[in-house]
Amino acid sequence: MTSSNNPFFNTDFSDFMDPQKIAASFQGAGFNANAWTEIHRKNLETIAEANRICFEGLQAAGQRQAEIIRRSLEEAVEAVSALAEQGAPEKRAALQIEMVKQSYEKMLANLRELSEINSKSTSEAAEKINQRIAANLDELGATLQEMSAGQPASKGTSKSKK
Image (cartoon, rainbow, N blue to C red; front, side, top):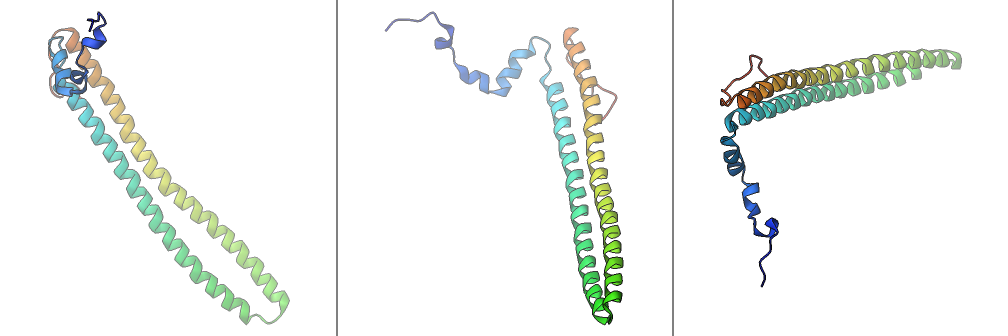
């Protein structure tokens, strides 16, 4: 068999899959794996917090929706009873028109309320992520500056948190 001059045939690619070996290969270049790990740990914490906020918002919206459905069913039963008590067709028609109007207004109010619940949780989660992005940029900039100066990045390179 002949020897190849192609470096890809003579390279052990398993080294590229080991994060510790990758980080170690950068240590001499001023790379501080601890600083980068800390930045990414904070990123994951922020994502988890944003997910928790969204989940709680969905729970609140679901509970409120269940309350709305229960109340709507009770009101529907009452409406059928009220219609049955009306004798003249004109009175029934007038009562039905009034019930449809009230039902429509309640539906709009309920939709508004559910929309506000969802909007609030989404805004809170987005704000957490926006704060983390700003902090992330500060931390990455500080880490890169320290790397270019040849100093290892210290833990907590930024004044901002999460």
